[in-house]
Length: 460
Image 1 (cartoon, rainbow, N blue to C red):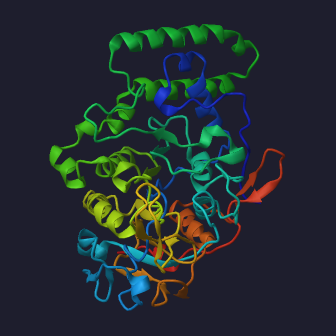
Image 2: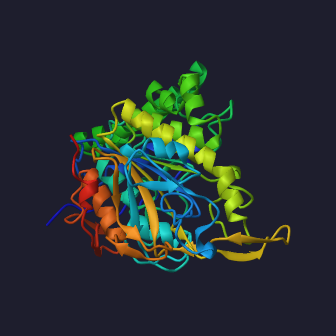
Image 3: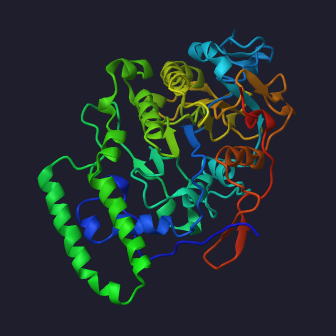
């Protein structure tokens, strides 16, 4: 039987990454989390492939991004034209001209389908594989990120293994415990005063005070040496050392210090929240973080601060036209950077969202102004994801929808296939690994699905 993960039901309460203070060390919050993270004792450290997900919270319209439908009736197609790309025969929406220039470095998946009707069940299905349709703030089963992190965490790591740059909403580690949640980074990396508190202390006096607290804790724990086997105690100390490295060492501080980037690189991504979130995500990947998510939401999206373009929320076409340039610049800069820095074999970039949007345009009064306007609603029956890197060949298109963009007519892909593909990239044998919940019941990591061949075959 394959490896098994044990649930982490410890008494230690999760401390938020941003608000971890000096007191957290003496209480062993961070070392405790690190110790919990290694509880699985599964040494997957060979090929440190990485995953970077750019998440469009709320669900972007596939017709206004990667799957335009110019031949659809007017009540479906919207006002924007398709444009050609550097891949012969591949067209995308005219709102994304920069995407068109880098299409040879991307693969478009146009045929992903799930049954999650809302913003919680959608991402929960995509990243857990469980067919939940009930509205829940957190999933009943751990997501892919929690599972992978539990397998890869190691006491010698000097940067976190899983970071959410504004984490994907509604995901979580469920019964695996808070040790496997994302280290959450909120705030605006474009703000000149942006920083991640308590990571990489710069003030020598703070380091000295922290050192004194560590020494005090060690004195308090001396009696453990008389009760515990020496090697177990040394393992425990190693997690204290890792916590020390995270809080005082230069590696974590430098990884999160976006101000160290060349100003020209920052300009290339866009001097705005989305551009700098994507740049910070690349910095973290380059610093050795295995799992990074960057959520594109907030004021750039419009009044509801998401891509949830119901007619009562947004004029869908005005909203898309306003936010598209920021999205186009940030994502293409990220993909180009990943390739130009030689990270494209190790790092798989995925651009995705909750679901697609209804191809048939709806109309309703704006909830703020009362003006009737067009919108698109939730549509899990067809959605488009973009992939780049991961050693896969670019310039591919997988699957197709009908001429209205309503239903998949070629190569339908389920969430199990998506998860199997990502697990394969991360070198994890998901078919054989089981997870045990808090009652000891075993659950398969991957319920069903097979890797998508075009997204697993290594290029050149």
